[in-house]
Length: 249
Image 1 (cartoon, helix red, strand yellow):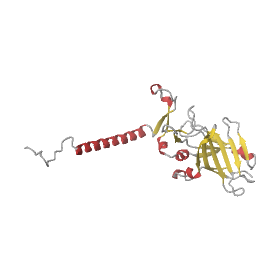
Image 2 (tube, helix red, strand yellow):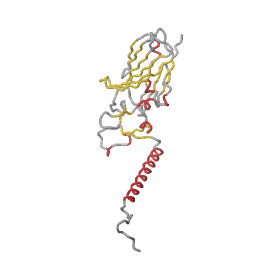
Image 3 (spheres, rainbow, N blue to C red):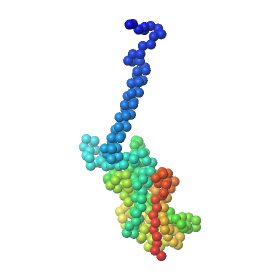
């Protein structure tokens, strides 16, 4: 049988627009399925971790070893900066000191795109080298102003790159000096600077984190600040980080 091919006839061969569209659509679906499967496989196979290169930056890829890489929780890649900072945040008290734990945020690079860690990791210089924590005391005020405890400390990644080294606040020594405005400096390296402001004639018994600032010691103008509103932005951080320190009377 001969099919008409004259005017008014329609022939759908292998190169017709409809077939090309269908082929492209099928390829796109196959690609998306492959990406989804790879992501699922990676998450399961590697415990949900992403591996970050922390070796010599100029070293060629061919000579890099397994020890040059360290794992971080892949969920950190999808959190906001304040979400990363507070996702593992907490406070503990032991032997007269308060230990404050914070996450180590990845921040956008100023040039070239991508992201980098806020503080030094594995011998590499970070974007910042200091972190300032501001706590306010609840329950009492001085001339209408809340008491403030400001801790300025060096920042450094812990063995887990997405967590900062714990900041140890010597509360017992601070309290022993009496409730008054003052500035202190520890003999640690790097030193910790402590400022007390708006302190009335007694100590608050509860301190709440109200601000975090990262900055460079050689250029304080270059910094990143997160206030209480940003720290509480995620549902997971609706309850602010705080600690109690009751003074024996």
